[in-house]
Amino acid sequence: MRDAADWMFISALRKHDVAYQSDFHSVHPTISEYLADEEWDEGVKKVIEHESSGLEDITRIFRVKPSAFIQPGGSWAPQVPYAMMTLGVPVYADGIFEGEPVWFCNNLCLRAPLYFPEHSKIDDLASIEEGFDKFYKSKREGVGLIVIFSHPCMFITETFWDTANFTDGMNTPKERYVTPVLRPRQAYTESLRVFEEFLRHILGYQNVSVVTFREVPSLYREPKERMLSLDQVLSLARDAASVNDWQIVDGKSISPAELLRVLAECIANYLCKGVEPGFIYVRPTLGPTSKPCIRPIGKHKKTADPLHLSRKAIEFVEEYGRIPSAITIEDLTFGPSDLLEATAKAVVYYSRFRQLPSRVEIGDVSDLPLVVQRWNLSEKTKSQWGWAILPQGFTSSRIEELTMWQAWTVRPAILHA
Image 1 (cartoon, rainbow, N blue to C red):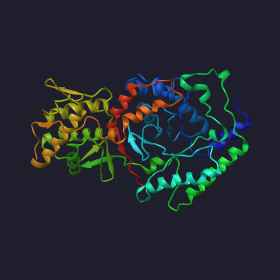
Image 2 (image 1 turned 90 degrees about the horizontal axis):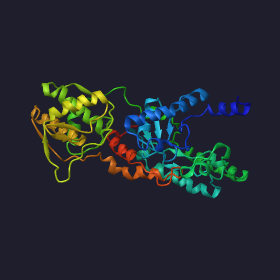
Image 3 (image 1 turned 30 degrees about the vertical axis):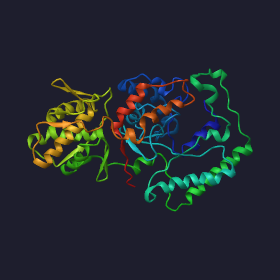
Image 4 (image 1 turned 135 degrees about the vertical axis):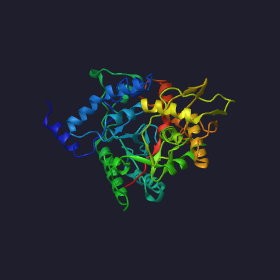
């Protein structure tokens, strides 16, 4: 039974945007812990199994579906954005991402770059406002998204609720939970005043609009069907022949995994028959979910039959919805970057001679997409393990590897509003 105060609290919150931050947050095993040794498919199933009841509770209690998944602390694993997308949660916030939204594993993902310190004093206001001004000026032509985060509980408490109960892998029994010390009323009243003044400063910008997570998907909405003309495919192929990276054409962003699928489909279903398609659909495609074939050092160059590779790749992608980790033909094994380069070079060749080449030389495209270097993704992932709640020395090479492989799915989200 709930008392009147509970219902008043719930009724008040219903008027706001309601997101989701996992079912148990810091209770062990946390998300990263229960996914530490899981492969892709098993991990996705575990997330759905562990988090569905929490999502259902939010929907039942607040009568709205959560607008976003906010990562709890350092509980990162790439299966979570994908699982949240399948569960109908359209935004993933925090984790290994940058400030500007991107698509990762078919979910809209972003990071909150601006933190409001909950224990602020009036003397801190000027520097906090300057921090916002800096982010605002970094937006080209004043266009972009700035996500601000804080922890409302910390306006009232001296320390986080979970620090004394779950730090370093500890699971304190409920009957021995330590309650955080409350801040003096004067202190938290001052902090709330600083927050109000900070909001007033933001609203002082004439061209700043305040939006909620629920509104973000509409700002970055994509057409129901992304289609590419043959000329656009040819243009994309020219870059993909030498660079493993996302691309943007006519307001549409394409991930390396999606581009590989487009190029292979173009070759296997059309160009090999002498047919030039009017357009080709771009379909969401995962990266490899097991260790990809990497070129041996000192053996960078080899040749391949692009038609044979394309047919094998399309057969795999259409069955599993992800690009293959490796394809073996005539005792030679080709990884995803080989497939991308071979299909791209074949399409470029077709654009010049109106026929497919029998073989292409490959060895110029990097094994991982450039976003891995651009974001320093390996270190970003490892930095998640510094969360104080995780057991001391916690690491997960499996999560780190899966993150690198799913870098094939990263592409910018295009602001259309």
